[in-house]
Image (tube, rainbow, N blue to C red; front, side):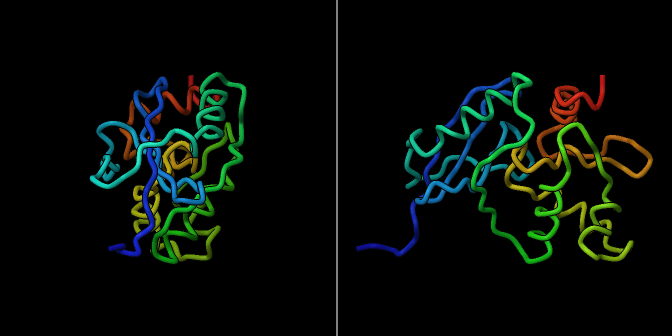
Amino acid sequence: MTTGIAPVYWTSVGGPLGPLLLTAAPDGALTSLSVEGQRGGRTVQDGWRHDPGPFRAAEEQLAAYFAGELKEFRLELRAEGTEFRERVWAALDTVPHGATTTYGEIAARIGASRMAVRAVGGAVGANPLLILRPCHRVIGADGSLTGYAGGLERKIRLLELEGVRS
């Protein structure tokens, strides 16, 4: 008896931020990247299929990124959320390596009002594809490092890696 639910594939890869849990759809599109202890992060579930095969390109690109040799990921990402969250996530994809933006600037990019800044923050915090979709590049309007689902120490390390902070 089949349930009609597509299987979730997963693997874990090492990195300077600790183990990274990656999940993918059957067609290989990445659906999440979580770090240990992440607020709202994924954990392996019963019925998931462990298979490193669909993740080879992601593993290679992550290694190159952490080595300072890659500035832009070229992977198929598929995160599902509300239309608002998907607009925010698409805006994150436009923030270049080595740059930062603010929640207010993201709101403006997607045509949302200044009143939507908190909602933008919620969508950024719900990003299921840490590192690959660069939510770590979003900072407070005053330049402060605001929350990061993976922990502020990881956000600092990522920004240092990208040359934004030293």
